[in-house]
Amino acid sequence: MITAEIMRTLLIIVIAAMLLLAAAYLSGRKLTPIALCGWGLLALALPILGPILVILSRPGESRSIS
Image (cartoon, rainbow, N blue to C red; front, side, top):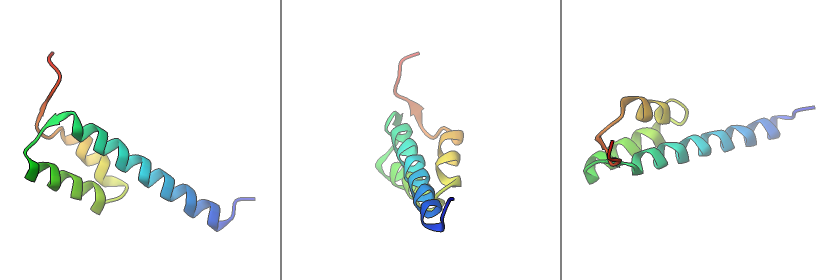
């Protein structure tokens, strides 16, 4: 049986994983420090939707040479 405590714990783990995913994605982009802080705050302010918006909007230029 899934209790409320287990569900809360899983929700926190998923939110933390999505925040780490957004941070990893932003570290691979060329952004000014202000833009990096802005996008990072968006990912923090909107726990579920924020990281998805950050990745989908593709801020800055890619650091990889293509």
